[in-house]
Amino acid sequence: MKILHFSDTHLGFNDLDIINNENINQREADFYDAFSQVVEQIKIIKPDFIIHTGDLFHRSSPSNRAITFALEKFLEIDSLGIPCILIAGNHSTPRTNLSSPILRIFDNFKNVYVSYDQKYKKIEFDDVVFHTLPHMNDETIALGQIELCEENIEESKRNIMMMHCSVGAWYLMQEFGEWVYPSNKEYIFEKMDYVALGHWHGFGAVGKHKNVYYSGSTERTSLNDKRNSKGFIVATLEDKLNIEYKSINIRPIRIKEINCDDLQDSIANLDISDTHDAIVEVKLTNLTAMGSIDIPNKQIKDLFPYAMSVSIKREFKKSDDNQTLSDMEAISLEEYFLEHIKEHSDDKEYDRLKSKIQELFAQYEEVEDDIN
Ligand SMILES: [Mn+2]
Image 1 (cartoon, protein in one colour):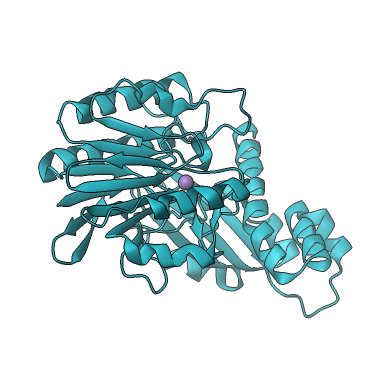
Image 2 (image 1 turned 135 degrees about the horizontal axis):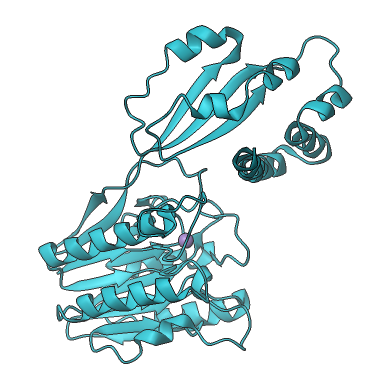
């Protein structure tokens, strides 16, 4: 039995304010392209089952374009005659009971089975049972649903568990309302032939378990995700479980460093050969406050003429002279802000906020650049 497992496709996600020839946000188009690649692979591999472990859409109320795209692709999937099972992730679960779950659009598809009501749902076939636990907002209710899942294990069939959550605290995405699977229920995994997970955006096995896998996302929803490989899993269940990770082609992300202590040399030695159509992130290191003013973003961006986008991070030299925070304030609001957070929070919180702040400031810098 061959099962194709993919996840976290985040249809409708957009970023970077770059529009392509078809007037679509380039990153949004990248996500559609990644999804299409998986569908093409499905047609070639012809698995017995297709499973998607959540965050099909980026939002619980996606755009018309994202919905239209998904309907087109799932019609293609539906026509293959391969059962396809989908669960809701935190991004596609409404936070209130007032809005209708988006996955209902698939209710009348012949071969598409959906699980979105924040409760356990058993989807049963001749020789296999899919135990689906979609995202749940309420952890107390979730516990009862996990127990229900355990009671429904069928000894005479294959048992596949599908969830969208963090197993333990390791796989948290720092998002609102994430569901953490309770560690004292991890023993259930051993009773399953395969546990398919969504939520974490990297491919990999979970801890000591040999049959519990995140397939990872099909694209990056943040520039902090530096992974250059995205794809899906083909899980083959014979006497034992065999896991094969298949990668798709995604736009590369390249990290470059310019050492401002040695600016001219550092620029002269830059390798831009791998930046074609890439997302490039440039770190300016060893900056001094005064030096920073002399290096406009435009000058750095112009070094990468073939890149799709260039974002710049400025890392200031730890000053050994008596430069004070108020000197910094006049230079970079971002630095001042980061220093402030460093002073008032612990390391963990600082690390968490740092990347978010840098991303935010990078966005505003881009806007400024465009205006200028
Ligand atoms: Mn996700």
